[in-house]
Length: 180
Image 1 (cartoon, rainbow, N blue to C red):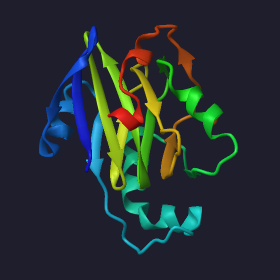
Image 2: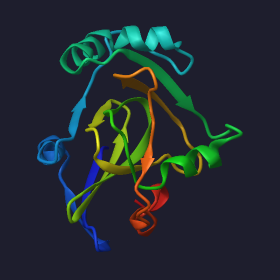
Image 3: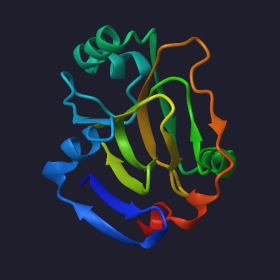
Image 4: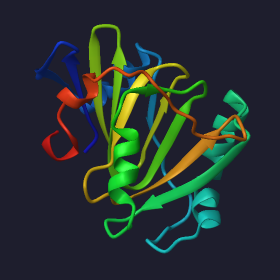
């Protein structure tokens, strides 16, 4: 089940849980797009990138047309990945991008945090969830110590995902994936 918790940025021990039916609107209020997608073809754990993209072709094409995305790909991480700890650490610090960060969870789950003004929004995304974090929004991502997900990513620039770290240590005080 998708989850959204809203924290006071200065009190990460206290959060308000948002009902699943209210997540999209609550995130839209801070400029974050959140929606659920359905595949148009059956997929398996061994489905190729092309099969995954074809199964969500209508939804991906609609986003490309709306926002000018130039490319889409599929990324997957498993608990046995040799660089999982380094990859996790790369995303745990607060950062921004000059582009959208768009992820659609085909399988598994991951935890996005978005720091907007004096609040921090923790969103546990699961299979079927699309999240689009707007350009220049402060955020971080936790895939957990044993990552298990497959995501579609969309990009407007050839460089793809380029982070600019804020230097703020705020992210370290919020619950990690396993504690959420």
